[in-house]
Amino acid sequence: NTVATDNHITVRGSDWYFAVTAVMVVSTFVFMGLSFRKPRSQRLFHYITAAITLVAAIAYFSMGANLGWTAIRVEFERSDPKVAGLMRQIFYVRYIDWFVTTPLLLLDLLLTCGLPTPTIVYTILINEIMIITGLVGALVKSSYKWGYYVFGCVAFFFVAYTVVFEGRAHARALGNDILKTYTICGVWTIGLWFLYPIAWGVSEGGNVIASDSEAVFYGILDLLAKPVFGALLIWGHRNIDLARLGL
Ligand code: RET
Image (cartoon, rainbow, N blue to C red; front, side, top):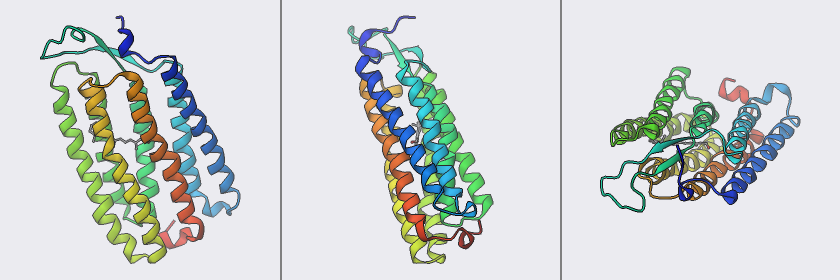
């Protein structure tokens, strides 16, 4: 089970993963630190947001240590002799991270707009379908992988619909400051989340870019989708009393 050198992270790739780990750790401390400026009853979003960056920190630590991956044989229909029969490094630990953190990100967002609990629950369940189909598709070597990808994309459209349409309608009813915070965080989220299936398509899916490039692509997305998103959300909540959200 050898992975050809050009399909495996290099020392630089590993350094990059550790750098992202450091940012995630620092962000976790910042979000927890900021929580102390609020009474306990007002700390829910700080806890959720810190949990997100903490889980990501551990996932990135694993990838920096070159753990949490498996090799799949890459099947090429066009037999390019340079790449045919190679193995590709698939970091399944990403999906363990996403399985935990994407529902938490949705909780941050959907609790902010005051959606009813049943809607939040089914949106999170559909989101889990998206992550698991992405994982299974990544591990499948035949072109059936794209079938899983399609299921994942359909699930994503449902999630995006809830955030963009249902969430906004509910946020509007709660007042301008909540609508503003929700809109900023919602647009940020959906804009970024759309790029993940593209990264998947050129990495786990089509094997177009090398593992180091994959590391940079997903790494930048994760930095924007977790610490930067968290900062926007916590900032937006600075003057919002959780009682207004029924929390
Ligand atoms: C996959 C492949 C299947 C189709 C789709 C995907 C979307 C993944 C997303 C991931 C978001 C991750 C985040 C991580 C934390 O920072 C699983 C790649 C649609 C949207 C926000």
